[in-house]
Amino acid sequence: MTGKVDSPRRLSAGTGAVPLALGGMLGAGVFAGPALAAAAAGPWWPLGLLLGALTAACAASSTAHQSTSYRGGGAVHACVRSRMGLVPARIAASAHLAGHVGALAAVAGVLGGFVAPGAPSRAAAVAILLVVLASTAGLRIRGGAAWLWLAVTLAVLALVVAVCFAIEPVPAAPSGRTVAESAVGTTGGAGVLFFAFLGFERLTAPADEHDRVAWTAVRRGAMTGIAGVCVALVVVTAALVHQLGVARLALSPTPILDVLGAAAASGIAPLVSAGAAVALLPVLLGVLEAQRSTALAVADDGDLPKGLARKGRHGTPYVLDVCAGVAAVVVSSLVEPTSAMAFAACCMLVHYAFANAGARVLLSEDRTWPTRMACLGMGLSVVLAMSLPVPAMLATLAVVIIGPVAMGLVSRRWS
Image 1 (cartoon, rainbow, N blue to C red):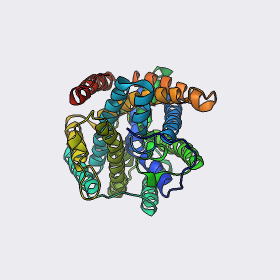
Image 2 (image 1 turned 90 degrees about the horizontal axis):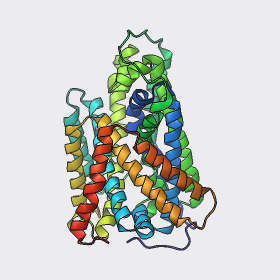
Image 3 (image 1 turned 120 degrees about the vertical axis):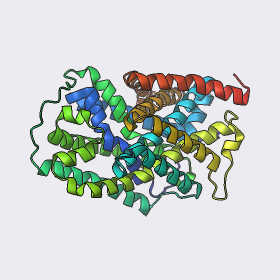
Image 4 (image 1 turned 120 degrees about the horizontal axis):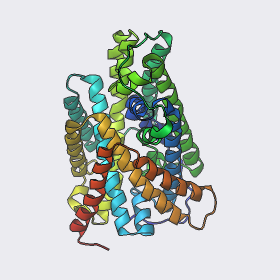
């Protein structure tokens, strides 16, 4: 189990962690999330965005405090296990691992829709394979490469937004689809949009000590990143709504490409697709790294087979990466990226409900805002998870039942 340290605020400065975290958050959620939010919340999507951002901010605060007390990879798992017990830790870890598999499938599916609209699942499988090979070879995006990756993502989004606002929208024919006119679906939209903020742990709870930055930089960077994603989502969604309308946006499986067709700008679609693919490939690598952190901590506890933690000559657990990649390929071939995104969001919300609960116990003697944020984050995570589509909730329920039982069978420990 990860060791505890006594001086949480004396952290060394790192380079590239802030753009890495922000670039991870500006992933598939920004490219595909607006359509799901419009379908769930209709014109109330801005309120859903604020709820999703608030939930992410609470989780970022909790994981940052856990990481300062439990150094190294799997800090959240270590905190939940030591503060709440074995079963809650196994439930949280199962949700975390399954959520990242779902996130791999979702991001790869969105990428496949850009590069091969006729065969997105095949393109997704190829993308996952390439990322697993790159990870096994020890590829890590840090420093200047992280800034370049972020610049590419912002450039693609800026181009789409400029096209949407520069060209007068064509009045749409009635689609027969009604959108939510009340705020009832707001929490569902917030749950989906929470997916867009995943990636903050790469700054708040880094697995590699070289990525650790000073406490003030963590706090400032995490909140700045969440605010930046909020701004990006507001601008991108507003541009899509301006060009397509809420009803058409809710029906669009690939809103970024569909809006170019609606704006008579299909000529730049190949450029946008190529830029989006370049932006999303490193996101896949980041998801794999985040999944690996908790998996190694669980394996060290004996709840996963030790063979999964076997490392290659580049120091990466290649068996674990391959298993995660294969599972993601299966998921991407069975479900649409939007369904995988909803499942990943539901699993991660369950995980962060336990993470916030663990942080609340960790900070039990603290009566300041971090404690209150942990309590608020725990409640919001549960509410948003319960507002997601029923298939996503049922799949998550299966994960949190089967996962802990399987871990108990592997370790032969039940308490």
